[in-house]
Length: 167
Image 1 (cartoon, helix red, strand yellow):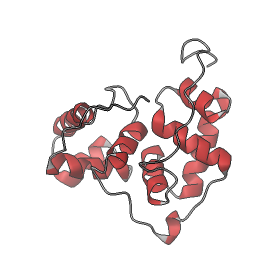
Image 2 (cartoon, helix red, strand yellow):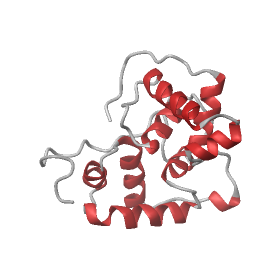
Image 3 (cartoon, helix red, strand yellow):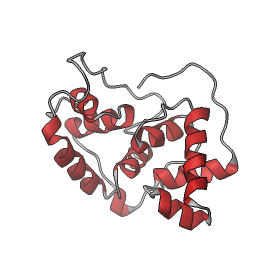
């Protein structure tokens, strides 16, 4: 993920509420129910958030969650005993890759794992963290200081052909 040096447009209060739900791992339908909005309104808010934060339109929800937290537009999830975890170096590398890349091949290359093992390792990390899903895992990683405004980034994936290669 390329970080823009362009100033962001701060989010509205409604967009921050929706962003907080994303960081907690809620789906668009769950957000719509919680906020008493239509699904289309939630989608529209998320699309506008991506524009305001200079987040690529096709970026994963994990990348969006990381951007929201890195730019301090929403607070990270609160710690609970259930969410106390500290992944090993490989797990931390995978968390960084999930936060910074959207295509599976790019995530796998940045994490240094085979593309075929990505889902299994990601699911294991989500379970280990007690997270609902990957965006929630990213939120918890910010809460635990694994990710933050000054975190070291993964190296960009090597140019081994298109992102879908090796699937």
